[in-house]
Image 1 (cartoon, helix red, strand yellow):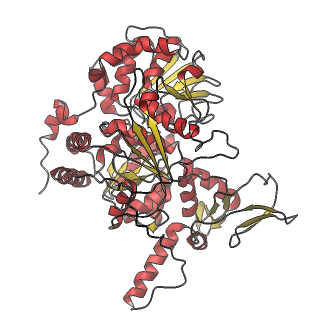
Image 2: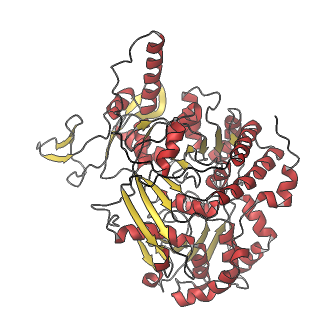
Image 3: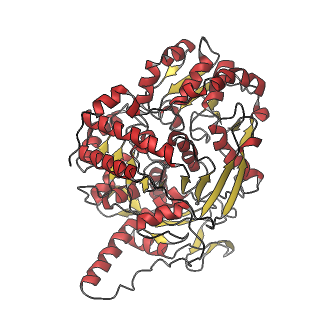
Length: 621
């Protein structure tokens, strides 16, 4: 199931209380932590638990009985009375959420009460604790603050402000989808209020269990009958599809921690909050602070965009803003919005590599500042894809038509928001790309533990995975160039394109023949090894992967996993080891000379088999 909802359910199973007449679901309970990632914190809020973050738990041991004093912000040992820790709430509204049995209950109940009292000509109720407006500032707004402001009907939203931004796009995937369905039933939702809701089947399609097959059969109708768009098993990864349905400078959410829009901004959430956002068209948010990352310079030979992804934690470590050790962990990104500048001409597919990886920084969300040209190109391509979907019977057609019209309307006046020059940030990190002379890898088993290629060269590699939402078609062409003419490679190589469109195009271009000759295991488009819930690497294997994260045991029991670019991963697959830089560059030479051919992205409006079908679709006036 969902890592957020399942983890919360597991905690509540032991510390929560039964909900009368509702089986297999509990509420309440407590969770204390030095750092609680935003998506976990929010899921516990929705479940009526009391999550206490930024709380030193080093003096608490298994078996201790503790007393929590929420109004005083103190934790004591029950037996000795010794003070163990102090804490504070960012907002006392959290206590109302606990009393209400969850944040969603509070929002609905408080809203109904306010509306009823307004109709009766009464003053707002004093029963509820109200969010305290943040102190206004004469400073400007960041890009994220402006995007959220637009979704709230104001110029910008300051950090610490409680708001309920409009949700323009909502995504759900198949491990969280059944729980989201249950939550939608609890909300008596018969039709979505969010402009576009999309359901994917990327986590379970490749190796479905009987319960997954049942989900594949029943969930599409449930979603489409409420006005949502249901993908099909085998279509590919939620993010690679959802990104193609986005409108610039809008806000959304999704039931997957990697729902990180490359245009606009998203705040990933647990199943309950995703259901609420889909049903009501808005979502509660305590606006986070922002951290600005500014790139400058040009990519050096052999350095890829994935190395810039890894350069963000690498630079933060060097600046003393991030530590790898779990004890006393320091993470400037945790719970904040990561805002990225300095790479304005990236294609949107490339920008997603950066925004996607903000999940591993424990960031609440991410923005990538792009120029108009790549976004215009992307939307023109996506309009064709959505029309192709309508022609191929995807439902709900009305939702797809509405989104196409939204894209076309934006293209008539393609203006993008920009941050104010005097906007304030919790921290600013400058990264000089000219100084990155070799690939950077995240080392076993922590995506924050980034080292240079020279630091890890020579390590023996057993398996290689090229796949996940961090990849696009250019990565597979590059890997194909490295593997061309090779057979009986010394590693077990897994390849899983992100969508069926990528897989089809790669097959048409002959790359599947190259992969097959090299002995690669070809996976259905989807999450594959990255999710780690079905296919697994061998126990104790050392792996180089292009996936999102490398936490212990995720890809396989006892596996040691490096995270790298697809280009470096392909070289590792061929050599059976992590190469030295000069070895690596022997294979990167051809890729560098054929970059324009290799890194061509899927522009559906320029592809006859999609364009010709799409041109037959006439939208209702």
